[in-house]
Length: 277
Ligand SMILES: [Zn+2]
Image 1 (tube, helix red, strand yellow):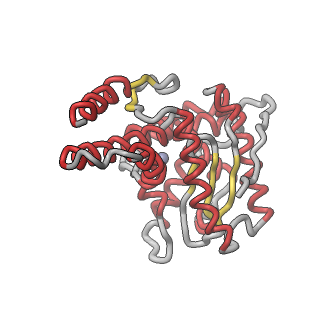
Image 2: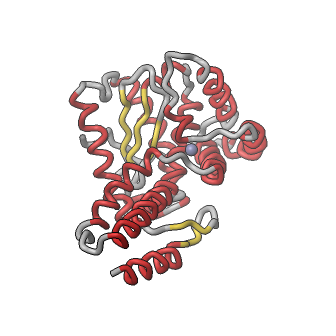
Image 3: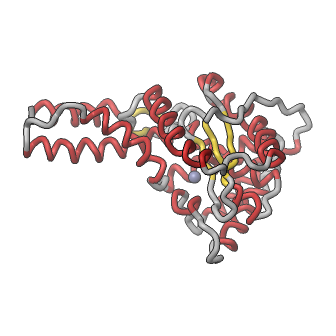
């Protein structure tokens, strides 16, 4: 048994590295795409069901409509980068937590934004588009899947050690590990490389969708100013490490993206539902 597990781990590492078609970077992918999406769906339901029971979901229909309109323009551009994402179950919900500044997009296109990000930062449509474009890019670039793979590898590593100590406990561990990985992945911070990739693709998607790229810099300035306030919960910054250089890099990207923003062609929309919790 010990030998089989060792071979499995070595094999996983060898087959696990794949080049991402959008970024070109080799990523460690232990978790297959369909599994990343199905496990993310489970994690999504597990997270949002209690929030709905507390009555903290989409309490402000106008705010939900505003976020849906913005994200449907972004998704229409996102699926151009990755045609298989046309079939994702794209949805967005507003979580009514006025103190929490956070947003996410899971593997498979399920998104959420916390109301505090909009109200506390007094975010403009262009700034909301920058946040959601960045989050959509994490999903497009398979960063969630990458983090799940890391979480699963950690879990398998721990499992291999425990099995090496006791040969009887093998049953069911892989399944448990994958489900756990989906939840752990949401809380693992993105790497600086992943952050840089999502900044670049996110600002481009937003500009192509008709949103001002200059909002990326104003958004991060507002985040930095607000992060000093004691009554705010900055969950976003804990999963999105922001190196000092980020603002400078965004300034450079802004200039390159302005022609997309200034293009007067019509901007298509892709359906984004309000979720099914
Ligand atoms: Zn990020």
